[in-house]
Length: 369
Image 1 (cartoon, rainbow, N blue to C red):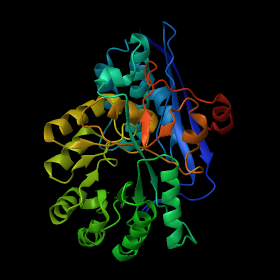
Image 2: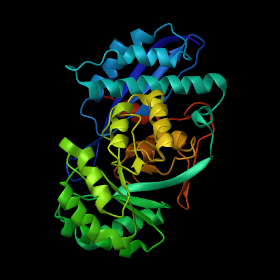
Image 3: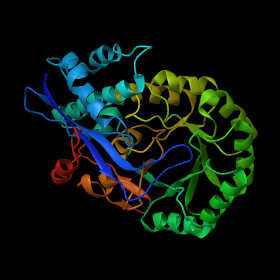
């Protein structure tokens, strides 16, 4: 099962409105499809990433820099392949973009391993459960949006079958954002999970003030509460001062970044993103660290990947998606065999590898590289 050739497809799908958070904008759905082929005729079919400014560059890196390192090697040599790819990272280079490219290659290899063995990635990694809860990301800041609109938005996710929502905060004052969360809780009742995500929007003092305002609202976790430049230390301070569990990890690009959060005592959940870090191979290391530390695992977006991973291990929790009909065309239209969400649960695909099937017409229409 030796690696023979590769095709990459960079996709940019314009969105109808800005689905941004406290520190960023989202104007398009971008991703990279990686089709790695073996001499035996196996082909991977997996896509990675969202909100990328460099999808074309990532696709180029996979083809021109990473694939030559793996060409001719067995798909079962994934640790050696990963080591060769990671050796390209340097202090001077753009490590984030390179790690995203490494993830594309690594996830494609794991897709091939599953297809070669006739096993899903979930089974390869432990096969702990066959389904898991799923929540929608929402609470977007948009011009002209009124308080009541946030309640209607979150209620629409409940009606769509989601188990909960990860609600955007951090873009206003703690008091103003607390009002938005309160409206959401009132709209959906007590049987719907609400998490809040500040996307590194506040200093520690404001994060603590906000958390204390919303503690009566039964919040599952407070994600990335603090500014990027000293986030681990500030999060540890926030975690000690509040009753809501804290979460981070999506901004890390390596298992060492995850270890940094654990060493600081900064988190109760880790949501390391396979597509931002080093793929499944590195995620396995992060998952093991979390298991040893008694920390639960979530995952930033990427339900087509995360559902396989989180369902494989005992400490996996919630998959995430975008239930808003305009936010994620990949979820709504391009992933054609996506399992149906029902009563807050998504079944995990049982086909070999990641089992993903894609609409080729959409790929052709929105291909940019």
